[in-house]
Length: 167
Image (cartoon, rainbow, N blue to C red; front, side, top):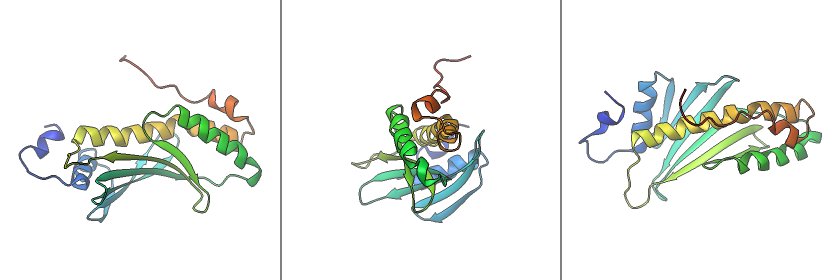
């Protein structure tokens, strides 16, 4: 049974219920923080990432945050900011930012579902996997620019290219 078949003929679907079903399908550990929020940790190749998805009924947006801790030395902040711009130039959906006070690298994405639209399980699954893939893609570049002392343009050379097609 596909993830979407779970929701057929069930009327109004809460987006966080869909996320919970996807997490259960993949056997991911999660915590339903509140009716409109869920948190989970996903293992990547480079590290673990914290994912939080929250539904905002007021603006009908499903927000995703994919975060990991980052504490760059103050003298590398200009390189980090330039690197963020370069990374975001390559992201078609979502964007990266650095939250200095929290010492967190953040990938964020908002799926607007205005007009009583319903996000399909496939959309949400794609959203989650795209966030994880983006974080994984640029993680080595962040490491090289911050701790390897490379210039952002050179650090981006290591960013894993997006794959197209099938093997």
